Image (cartoon, rainbow, N blue to C red; front, side):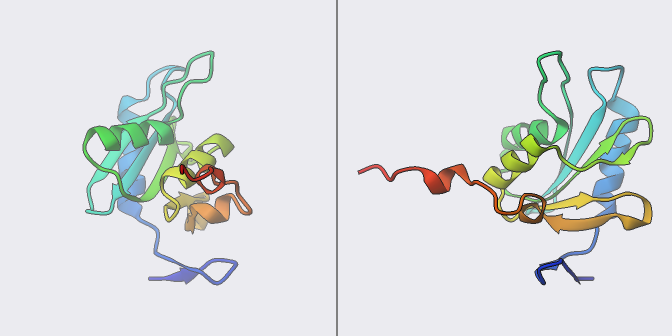
Amino acid sequence: MTTQTHDGNPVDHVDHELIQAAAHIARTRCRGDNHTMAAAARARDGRIVTAVNAYHFTGGPCAELVVIGTAAAQGIYELDTMVAVGDRDRGVVPPCGRCRQALLEYFPSLKVIVGTGDRVRTVRVTDLLPESFVWADHQLDAE
């Protein structure tokens, strides 16, 4: 089922299998204060990649950023949809600002699952970061 975003762009249905994959990792792999979030992403070829955050007092990478590296380590460079889920049954958690920027840079056509309960929905990463700065767009061409 396809829906429309506020600007009229079509967005695919919610990938509940992806949410379940992230929730499973959050329940089974998140331990203590160092790993409190799990993320799952669906590759363009259908594979699902999962990861957890690596919290540290210096910040550490969010689960969404760890997914990017995990996917690359598996030879996956095109992600279609991503979701993050909190431990202790917190449900879907939207990406932070840093992750929104990184996801936009790596995957400008990425869809992200956000919302809670019966309001879970899929949006484009560009909708999460409107009027965004794209680093590559501002680099001088090498001559």
